[in-house]
Image 1: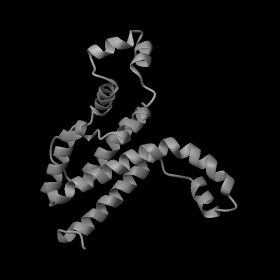
Image 2 (image 1 turned 90 degrees about the vertical axis):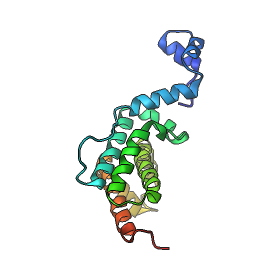
Image 3 (image 1 turned 60 degrees about the vertical axis):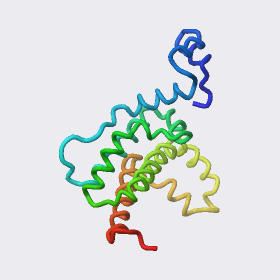
Amino acid sequence: MANLSMRKLGAELGIDGSSLYHYFSGKDEIIDAITARVLSHIRPHTGPIDDWKTYLVETCLKVRRAVAVHPNITPALTARRQWRFGLAVFEDTAQVMSANGIDPAYQLVIWESLDALTVGSALLTTSAAWATSEIAAFESTFPAVYEAVHADRVDEETALELSARAFLTGIEVVLGSGRPQQ
């Protein structure tokens, strides 16, 4: 997205880039529109929620899948706070958390942590090839790291699901008394 310009976009579309200003105020507004479009299929739930943690994990996986289809959107998700496009989903998940006894004081922390895991998962996917090739030079110096990098891995979606479930299970344990211990 850093290389996006109105001129380049116009050329790609076969139009004069300056005509885009009729529809958008600038590059940031275009990036917002692209982000909104990529995330537009992620909607609040309908019907009862049997397990709040599973619901939150499934929401993370939906975001991860959307980003996997459009990996070039990942820098926009990290460079700017794009979560306003998910306010309806956050409202829904906040209601689900409240219904399951999660104090509203902790809901934003949970949401932002899951967002970081999800977007971080997408970022790590784009850098995985680099990391694997770079670490090969350190086989004798860092053998355990080398072995871990070259071991059979679970796919990215399974890794995100495992991380999100572990995080939410930890949150449930820590908040079991109603407040984190100081």
